[in-house]
Image (tube, rainbow, N blue to C red; front, side):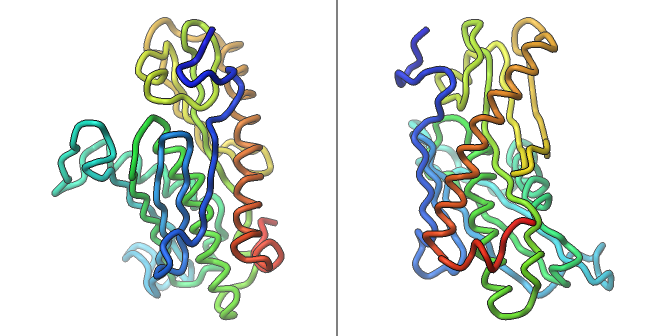
Length: 248
């Protein structure tokens, strides 16, 4: 069965990670997954949320948003984050916290802002994948300043969407496929093959365990490619990053 962009079912959209896309911000990355573009930037503050005061550990959180022109029809700016926006922000934050040894971060908060410049499906998974690169760059700077140990970054994380469209398992769904999928799933995994989070919804008939397992295998294949793209981007951005800050 043909896909809208002509890809095979097991092939990712073209992936591009551009660390340092913003020259004035120290830790940022533009991720392009086909026609989905997300700008991710990590900012460090020497403070923690009230519930962590005095505990000697840090926090990683995220904020997600879509620019008005990210879709064919203008998206109104949110004066207050919608339920969808909050849910995606929390997903990104949970995913990125899995990458960090929070006790080694000290009483600092890293906020990863993920702004969707253009949306064609998979914005939340692209935000996690690009957000990890921005986060790693922020941690590299803290390591370079001898403020945190290299082991603060304990694992790499990336995410991708999978789904069943026209009865066929497919990797990395653009909007045209996501909108008519019988089942769609977002998968977040570490570089050790661990599952960080799985979000799955059967829009049509319930899925079988065999279908679920096949989609997880397909996601793992795509995430392995994304993890390599992250490593390549970080090595190009900071040649010493792979040794100074490396998931252990």
